[in-house]
Image (tube, rainbow, N blue to C red; front, side, top):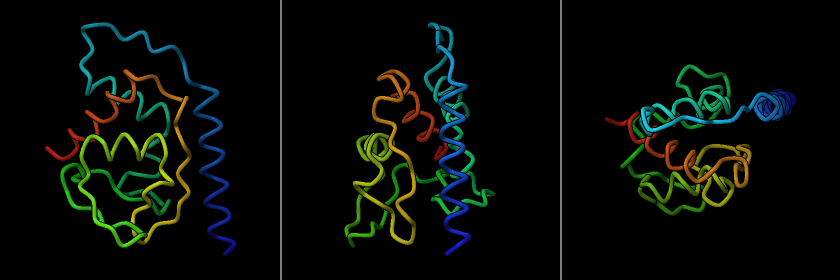
Length: 127
């Protein structure tokens, strides 16, 4: 119980820090969507939880795009663009089976361009 509380506090701390360090994304046409997605992913600290080597118990994203995902509700969904978008903006809506609903919502935290770039980046992790 104590360990889960510590993990949740670390996630909250990382989330607060990522918001404080978030700068203007003035990319430009030369930056690909995947590269922008990777920048946003790193800026938000997503790899702190979603990297395979992470100490935080969150689903790894490598290979998830296009796969079938079992949810806590018992439902199975395909990890397509719509699911990835929803998982970023409102992650409590469809929690992956076996994981705690600890991911923060990014609704209002990322622009539409950043959201699309994040989806492209997650998709690239499955190629």
